[in-house]
Each structure stands twice: as C-alpha cells, then as structure tokens.
Amino acid sequence: MFENLTQRLGKTLKNIRGKGRLSENNIKEALREVRMALLEADVALPVVKEFVEQVRLRAIGQEVIGSLTPGQALIGVVRDELTRLMGEQCDELNLNAPAPVVVLMAGLQGSGKTTTVAKLAHWLKDRQKKSVMVVSCDVYRPAAIKQLETLADQVGALFFASDSTQKPVDIATAAVSQARKQFADVLLIDTAGRLHIDEEMMNEIKALHAAAPPTETLFVVDSMTGQDAANAAKAFNEALPLTGVILTKTDGDARGGAALSVRHITGKPIKFIGVGEKTNALEPFYPDRLASRIIGQGDVLSIIEEAERTVDKEHAEKFVGKLKKGKGFDLEDFRAQLVQMRSMGGVVSLMDKIPGIDQVPEKAKAMVNDKQMSSMEAIINSMTPHERRFPTVIKGSRKRRIANGSGTKIPEVNRLLKQFGQMQKMFKQASKKRGVSGLMRGVKGRMPPGMRF
Image (tube, rainbow, N blue to C red; front, side):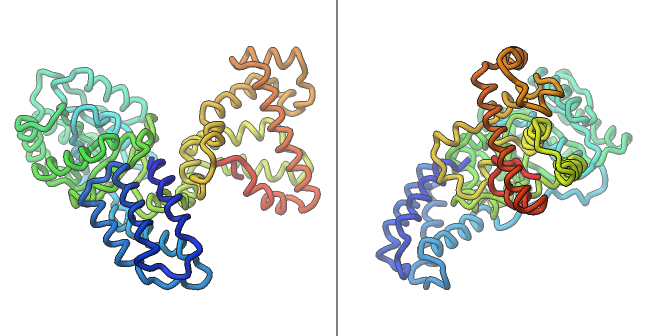
C-alpha cells in the first residue's frame, strides 16, 4: 500500500535537501510534486488542495533546528499533516456496552464484507479475548451464508444459522436473542451488499439498524476503488449513523488514495485495514504509523508489537541457552526463524514496515518474498533431523532426495545451503569476539527482515 506515493514523495523530499532554509521558492517545486503524487495516488481533489495548503503554510520560512536538514524538516511537516488528515489516533472499537455488543457491517457487493466479518471475529477472539457470534442477513445470496458458516468454523466463532426464506430483520432479532442466551460478548451482523447504492438496499439496512441497534456500524469498502470508496462511504454515512470504516484489500493497492480521502470526506475514522487474504490479516488503523510508512520511515512499533505477540519465548530462551553451551546455529534454528516470520504476517508485510525500504531497488525486493520463504521451509522439512544438525553431510544424492521431497530443484537446495552457511559463519565470528550478548547485538541489524531473536 502507498508504494507509488512513497517512491514519489521520497524523490521529491530528496531534492530539497541541502538548503539552509525552507522558503517559498525552494519549496514551490516540492509542493507541486507532492500534489501530483497525491493525485496519482487517486486522492480526492479537495483533500489534495487542503493538504498541500496546510503543508505550505507550516513549512514556509521554517528554520532548520539542530542537525536537521530542510529535507528532514519538510518530511516532519508532511508526516504530521498526513497523520492529521487520516485521523490523528487509532479509534478503537467500543466494546463497553452490555453484552452482546452488536456490530453491524455494511458495504457494497464485492468489497470483501463477509471475509472481513470473519477477520474481525478472529481479531476479537485473538486480541481482545472475546467470545464472538456471527450471522448473515444476506438472504439474496445463499452462498454468502454458507461462506460465513465455513469461515466462522475456521476462526472458532459461534455461527447463527439463517436461510433465504427468512426476512433480514427477523434474522437479526433472533440472532441477538441467541447471542444473549449463549453469553456471546460480541455479535457481528453481515448484511446484503449491492453492486451499487440503491434505495431498496438503504431502506433494508436502516430497518436492520432499527431492529438490532448496534453499538458499532462499520462500513466495509474496497480500497482499490480509490475516490469511489470515499464517495460510497459518504453515501452510506448519510443513510446510517456510521461509527467507522474498514478498508479492505490494501495489500493490493499501491496507490492508497482511499485511506487519505475517507476520513476527510466522511468525518468517520478508519478503524481497521485488511492486509491480506488470511483470516488473521486485519490490522487496527494507526494514522501516525501509516504516515511514517508513506514517507519511507517504516513502522517499527507495529513490528515490535507483532513480535511480542507471536514470538515463541520458550524457543528463544532455548536457543540462547544452546549458544551459551557452545552449540552452533543449525538448520532447525533457521527453520524456526522462517516459521516465526510467517506468524508475523510474512516477509512482504514486514518489508512494508521497515524504515528506508523505499530506497531498496525493486529487483532486490522482488527476490525476497513469501513464496521463496515457503520454498526454503519446505526444503528444510524434507531433510532428516541429522541433516538439519549437520548440513555438511548433504551431498549429491541427498540433495536430489531433498529437492524431490520439497518440490524444488537442486539449485534451490544449493542456494539455501549457501545462505545458511553465510549466516552460520556470521554467528561463529560474532560469538568468538563478543560472546552471546555481543552476538545478539551484532546479528540484530544483519538478519533478513523479520528474523529476530
């Protein structure tokens, strides 16, 4: 997300470095580039105009303080204004109502609404430790009801059955009653979508809202529709008292215009963003962190939080203990790090949050991907325990067996062994010079993205 905007802004802000003062003249060209970058990102024109004007007012004449260059000072102004534009802070779900807390999900057909219901159920169970029930009021698409039932089973949520012969209002009221009987903390109501906004759909969802008064009314919208996403959110906001927006498919949107336009046009906060197809690919929306990612400063806080939440502390302690006893870094340890990186959302998700990633050539970034990581894990899985502990025994016939077992080719096995050999050598050198604590400091900045202990 924001890949194109990040690259364009990065080049623009580079060009202004080296000046002793930010003035009307040397910032004029930069602002023109910023304006073009935002328009190319499909940000709504009124939003672009206001944003650029606010940056201009704050930046012109601003003195460079301490060691900051004018480019860095302008970056600070742009980051602050991006944060303000997207909402200043993370707006959390209101879960402080009597159970069951009803959350009504609205949106157009194809926005990823049903999948998002499952993702939100997973997030509520995993992060908030809530018991969740889901129900579908989409009586026009029996397949949608079946889809939600399947997804509910995957994420461990309670499912309230419904069918196409029932009325949506009756389904909703019955679901609220059942959620209360089963002591569910939260009830997520999936509603019918349409290909476009029409009066019939709006009347139906208004009736649902009245029948099962929700604590949260969330509008689910496909971020890849750009300005249309903001306009659709505005139309729904006029019909319903929306409390927030969920942007889906942000992992496939290199422009990001919707995220920058929705808050300004609707006045409603973005509460979550969908960052992938898996049921755990939903993140709370932090405007300040996303603003940092847009200007190439990364999102280290999110990486740390994800690591703290998913890291296998027991394995990490065993690994450190193993090094203290003088035992080396083997392929079992390497595989554990690949698994850890996958649990943190995958290498692509992590790379997007690493500071300065916009400066890395596209060819280099393309070489490191989740598919490659999965292939490396499959290769290690095809080895015997002895081979993982002593990789030097892996020769010709063993390589062929490992390649066949993992569905790869011998050159890929050779590449993995070479990469592992380099990492093993690095561990040995650092350990001899500085001990375990020094090794950890030395390795910290040199491991592949996400591979941290």
